[in-house]
Image 1 (tube, helix red, strand yellow):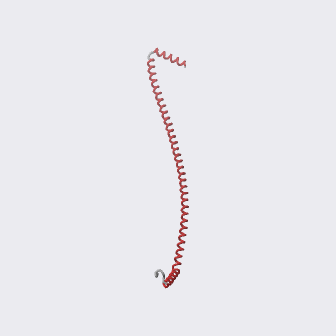
Image 2 (cartoon, helix red, strand yellow):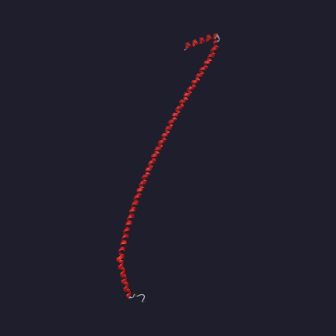
Image 3 (cartoon, one colour):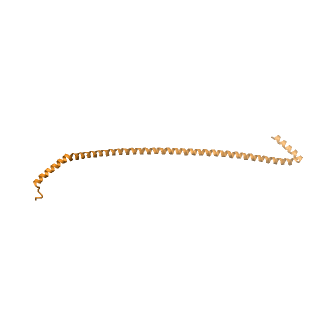
Length: 164
């Protein structure tokens, strides 16, 4: 049992050495250790506060970003609507201009056709008149060659003049 029960002399020196170690630790190590622990605790608390503030700031930034994105989408929709209206206006103007140009071309074509028709009719009338004169000339030459026929023709012309 000698190993389990301590010797009173050993116990005494153990107490004295323990006291000296506690005194040295308290004098030189305890205050720096406690200061370091306190500084560490403060830095951890500060870091937690900073993290919380950063978290709030991130949430605010995210909300701001969402608002900006929403505004950008609205602006995009407005711009697209305006572009669509402008496109439709340009298309309508182009159609109107094309219609006007087509109508103008049709009117010009009709005028040209009418002018050519009138020219053709005039030419046909001229040719008919020339042919009529030639035919009349030949008929008159034939009828005037005989004196009896000449008198008959003169009498017929006089009767026509009286009737008119």
